[in-house]
Length: 458
Image 1: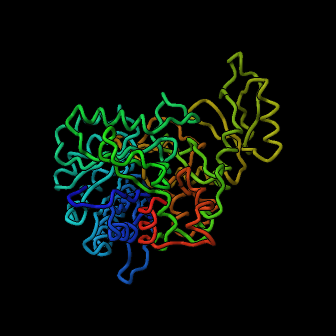
Image 2: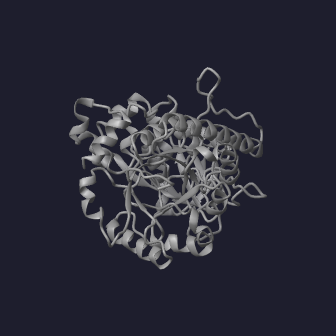
Image 3: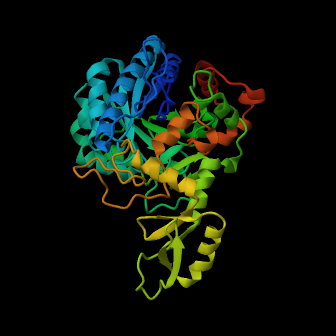
């Protein structure tokens, strides 16, 4: 893959400073494909100290330019670190998210400087039609991330057929098991997972229609022990298969995550990882349940329909809210529970785009509103702040308080914030850190030791 014989083992890219040049280079040095993330990557001062991503712009447009500059500089630095660390072994990929803010100029900015150090670009989170054209300009392979054969078919017909030579492989990311954002469609039930074999076979059959019989498919999501996938390997029906590991590389000596996060991984239970739809992207995502996640769950549960003015025959019950006591109008049956939330201290009503109002404490309400105002435009469209990367600078919808600022929550997790107030993405197999004998007595391997262990089947 990407011009070299490698172990069919790929490090999954994890954004906001988790998969970096050191982890990617170490994975490549061990013989596989390492992946660093170009989503809010870290950059450093001359003495090697981390440069915090602080935003000085007074407007969203000004902060958007700062965000892109940070990403380009960080991507260049992480590519160089990965290149130096791999010592000529394996391959280095860079991961971007199509629906992240500024992805197109960030790709150009990084590849224009260090395309000779990057062998492939993986891209998901949306339908990345344009990634092939961009990456092909720099002679780099591209690896779209899809969750169905149907999605790949659309990408191929619209764009990829014109850049077939640069298609290095296709990542199938299981929408029920993968960590981070998942590609569940409206036609799929989030609580009824489907067997990945049939979905990957469907993907392969579609690829065969286009002459892509030998283009590797990379299975991502739910991969822990290779022995569980033995019937996929050398399987003529599926064709060439590689495997992506996103969660297991979190717990290595090279992994930059906090020691407290690593300790948490070793003690997870199966129901500690939740699939939810709070992300400002609108996608489902899988994360570790903590105080932060429970707060989002609770806020959403404290929610009723409302009308701003009287007149609707179904909404006749007035409820004064906030310091000024301005009323909203509820259905009479909803008034007692809403009054109960107010009596419990959730006195602020935060209105949503769906004509509902959620109840929060004054302190949390103020934090939500400040966070929305401080938006640094890290997504192409953000339902939390209503920012959009378009001429108007807005989605045209009311900002949604049931969501959150994803960059702030991920930066806290990556850089010393309180983990109870952070977003910790993880795949649904993360609880196996506590049951896998490899990690007995809190053992934390190097990346080399982890890759060697995976090759054994365990």
